[in-house]
Image (cartoon, rainbow over all chains, first blue to last red; front, side, top):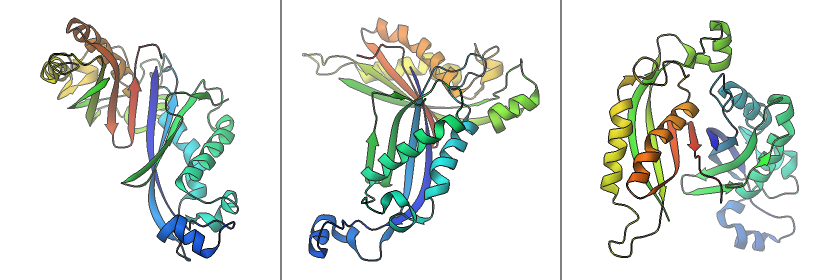
Length: 147
Length: 139
């Protein structure tokens, strides 16, 4: 089993608040993350793909292909944005790191056919660091086919 | 229980297949294909799986593992040009994936001989890229 992980970064701002909650309730649940004008983070995103290395190239996937997939589907959309206002997925979804990971996973899957054509790869995990102290991970252990 | 020991080595390499033209190699490997090579500070994590010994309270004496990693990997890889000085990279492209597989094959026997079991290895080429490799079947 070979799993290759590449680490990327992006910067974005957000405000954690739910339309279903009152202002007091938002303050209670999200604390200073609910401050009215939002705030930002330098996020790190780790993308893990699993696949047998190609016998000729010796690589699970050429780095350039992996980078262009992540750049086109995730980084170009999310870097230097205000998540609540600039990303349509977060109009009605609180942009917590948990939800950001779910959205990023769907973007990567939607773009995999176009950017990684014909490759027998599995997306085996995603990990997001919101700060050096908070990280969130999905898909560790089990992996699902990209195509 | 899983236990992990970390080690570092520095080495240079060129990623290019002799079966491809230099343009094709550049397209496939990017800067990694530059002919005179370049180096990385590799970080290796070796993970063993085992039960805690009821007498000494350890899965394996980590000093013994440290020695094995030094003999089997660091003495071979550290401060070497992999393509010229470390087999099989005279004929196998020293990509991160292939280096991880080679390190697994060097460690698996000696660790078994110590009465333990290699679970997986993780090899970091930089802060931005690492590979996790295991030949064990998933439970």
